[in-house]
View 1 (cartoon, rainbow, N blue to C red):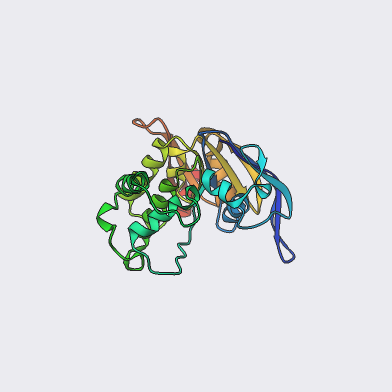
View 2: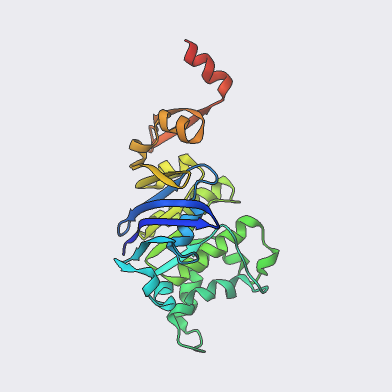
Length: 263
């Protein structure tokens, strides 16, 4: 199942946030959105999962206009893990993850054995089985993030949208979570701040700057010293890691970069 934004523009009051942005995530492709703070990554994702409505342009889920599809159909096919974790009531972790089964249920239909097994698997996959009876409000930021990922897994959607999925996670759980997402073989689009994480896991990268796509391609094509300086304002050495075969960035403080440029 594919996901595509075609010429999407969006404004807040009189300020244009997105300028005719187009991205295409093919079936089972892992695409990363990168760019500085305020570049429009989260706004683009919110337009793509219908939290916001584009001022112009179209978002296509499985080649069909997402605005013309029912909420239930979208929920069956598309799961979202946002930066925020808004939960109005204090549910247990198990109950919250079980809500991922809602799109697959009829009105007032109770959970069946299959639903319990799917929720159990989602808890195990995200490493939070031991938190099942805990109150969601009692969890750390990182634990809450993993709960929301587990709920998305329980939803069994074929398209996954992630807005800063590694935010609040320690490095071990960052890697475990990204490994898990990669092995699910879903259609994935994720806004990422960590460029080494993006380089490691993404098939394609789109670079946003001031609400426009300025570059896209494979991590090897996109992550160049020139682009990092122009878009992110940083100097970096980029190597191919001997074990992973992926680009690896080493950032260089300005004081040392200036010395290198003088040699």
